[in-house]
Image (cartoon, rainbow, N blue to C red; front, side, top):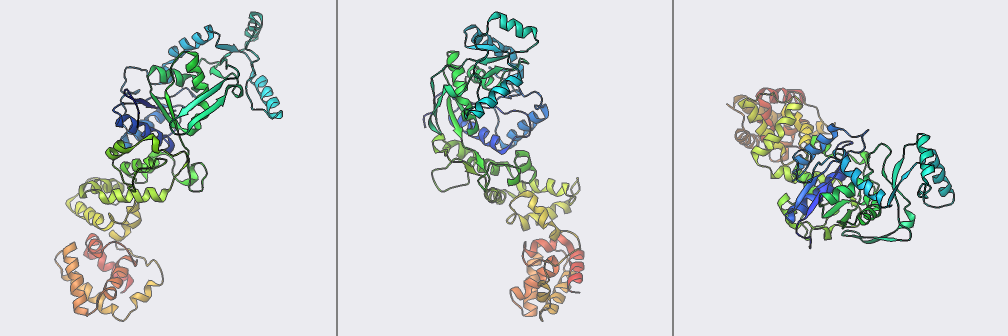
Length: 486
């Protein structure tokens, strides 16, 4: 893969809401390229949508990127040689280049009202033509300009699009894409409030920040010819573009809330691990060379390439994310998974803020029982009732039939006596106890373990009994048996 020296890439989100999955994937792809080629990953905030932008959203973006492990080399919070890194702090810079284009005759003031523009738009649609600005203010006389000013009209600045020109985008993902300038129309580069439009500001920023590669979502491909025209008008070399396909839901429609959570913070709250989310995002559109699907960040950095990014849309499969997350949960050390489980259990009220030795012992039993079975940290709460309290409820009426089998009274009575006389319930003592119950009642396998499990948990399947019984303690186990079997 031939990405040159001095690789500089950027992620430039708008702080108008939480960091969404699509944005996180764009950030990840940029980060992986920067790290693979020992370049810089720049974070820039595109906050020119003043009404919708907020520092709260900006902080959410920062926190989400850090949670994913995508640390940036330059950005609004840490600075860098090409700042400021917020667009609203760069207005004076944009103004300079706007004036340069006006002075060269490559941009002009437009005084058209919203009503006039809408009328023109509707006329074009009625003719079956693409809506575009037809250049009404392109050649205004000084007298016409003065008249509009006297009327109190506040002008925008439009870029003068050259006619009959092919604009070629040599895209690293999509190949050669050609646009016709005649279909674009003169577009606004500076709004009447003095704030530049996206298509202008992004060019100035990318050039001055020496961005070598612009890796972004496919939806920006249609903006690219407008941006290339500004590069050419200012005599600047364009960066290399790579437009990554959309993310679709399993029903092949564009990813939305109905497909599940859409923001990074929601996945964090639902108990997904950052390493698993990164691994999953990398596979949304990128195909590794082999069959392996589990990658550390270091392995992704080593293997990732834009050549293996597909043109086809990526499908967001929540089941695959859960599977990957489960792999990471099972790969956690005892200490790591304990530290991950504790806040989940505390938030749900199953653990106090200050933990005792008994609390830590109980957590260990929960870990032993559930680490191999859950796919997210929050799934622990779906099973936690098996480990706490004296309440038990049969999950189906069919289980009563198991408890009515002829060997059950002897099995249960033998178990109760063992529990009452054992000094301490630990995984080891429970394993021994269950073997003794089997031996003394001359019953084997399901004939012993199934009624005991149902009597204590109300379920036919679940974590090992030698984790559940010690976690419940003698009193709760005996009360549960009393409620289910008597």
